[in-house]
Length: 231
Image (cartoon, rainbow, N blue to C red; front, side, top):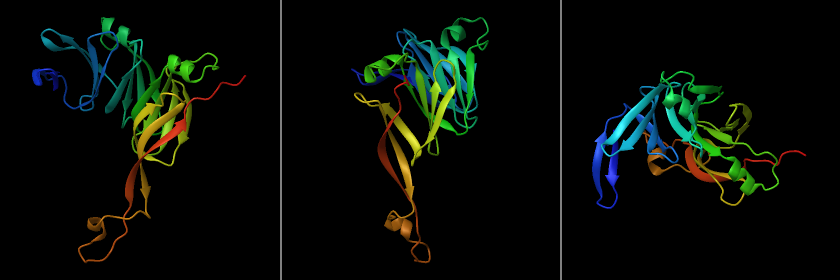
């Protein structure tokens, strides 16, 4: 279900069932519309906020197990990461919502990856011009993180072309953000270190002997994500 909450009165004013297992919700810019991923029904769902509450507009079958959705600043493209099918689906939002067939030609690109994607970060042309003033011909970029491992993919947000895949000394990447003043990506992730000290509970086995355990340490990391184009 999705609930609408009156923040001033601190009470729920509406609750509607729209899916089976909701994994992500984003607002479409300059509209009263939300896009929702449902990993059980394997759908992207469009809902509108009206005076009557939440109303489902369209449902789009998508790559199996969608876990995140992102929308560009123009509100005309949606990007859905599907965990176990290892795909990024790029959806033309106006085509999807205005077409007579709800699923006809709405998915304009299906990007296949070699890892299971989860987190996504869109970097628009405006951000690139702001952070790299001398960059020639900036275009939108989509950064996709490995849901379990250490990979990052850089994708052309329009064509769906995978521009590069890089591997970091990281694990289970989460919470990616663009640094406000430098062309760096800031993220949280885990690190598995077999030499890290374990907790007392993890050290003790039933027989009372000490067992070696790995501990995941959450850290933040900054890496450059945009390079100046070659002259």
